[in-house]
Length: 239
Image (cartoon, rainbow, N blue to C red; front, side, top):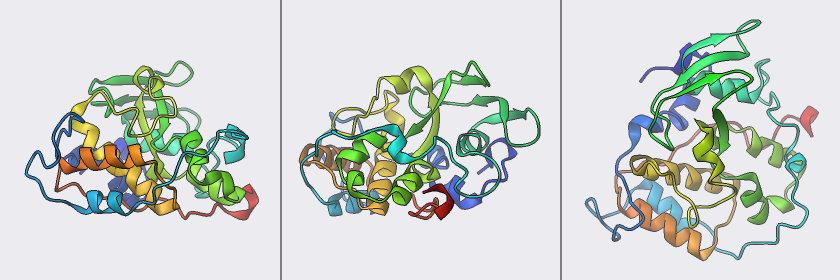
């Protein structure tokens, strides 16, 4: 596997999320019957089955600011989180004013759409997506967390992915039951990443969401569960 853009981001983070582009193990069309693609279960499916099921809490009180200043440098590498993810996920990266601010890059085979997307700073067609949307997290446990844990989730590379902006806008704050990437070849990896984030942070799922996760992951029995990322508590100076 190549480190994207020559980024000096910890290799474990590359393996945890964007390495998933090479780890996709099945298309997992949500219309498939459970067990398609070989049947059985893998680590991602087992983790999905272990998630707590509860109803969705009201969105009342949600605000992006509840998850801290966007793209805080919680890993203390002197680059903001957005640029860290761009460096990790883009090819042919070019910088402006040093080695942090990404000015240009190519998102090769965008995981959500499957197309190549060019990133140019200031007029970007690339979003950094929260795989588990912050609003979804708020309604499934994060409302009750302290600020440090919410800030950690918002900046955890395990929960972040550079994607085509236009495709990402259709997702909103949807969970697996309401939105999956149009690129069917990435669905197993995408759902496994959502499971990994929810398991790491102790977020619950709705019954419909869990059923959808299990249906997708049953179609890719070899799917691994991503791991790694940042600690689940941001440094105190960000609280």
